[in-house]
Length: 171
Image 1 (tube, rainbow, N blue to C red):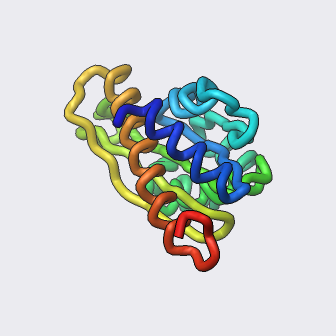
Image 2: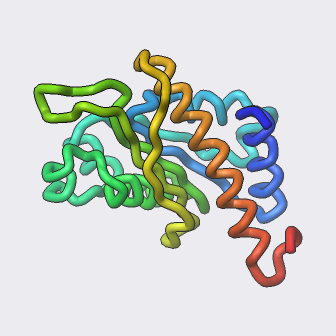
Image 3: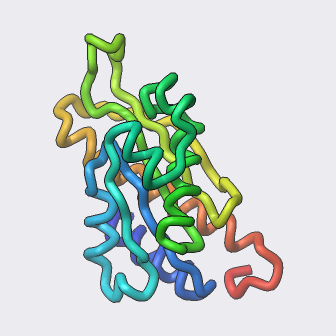
């Protein structure tokens, strides 16, 4: 499946369960939000998203712990989880996905490789958090690769989560 097909499947899961989704992203710069907003009838299941790049904005809008944020330059699995949970609150959604990381090396900060962390939460429950890598070299291509990976993982995690909920139509 491609990203559009995954989003359509995510939409089906969310609409069948009466759920909505929001997005908090950093490294992907809005690509994930754009992909979801392009879906047919996006307003039925997509609450919106936020792109936050620095510690101040991640703390202000998503409630991440500023001490942990500063310690890890806002790039860690825990920060991704905090961002997703903050997105649920900010957008009053049932589900949120988040991503934070690097699309290019930052040698002056000791970052020699590219990686990102993503998370998917349902309300306060983290159903997945993980590290992402990319074989792409150009930052723009890395961002698009991360976007595709996040959409695919979100679909798989939501499918598993909702399939295993008692009384769900997808059971």
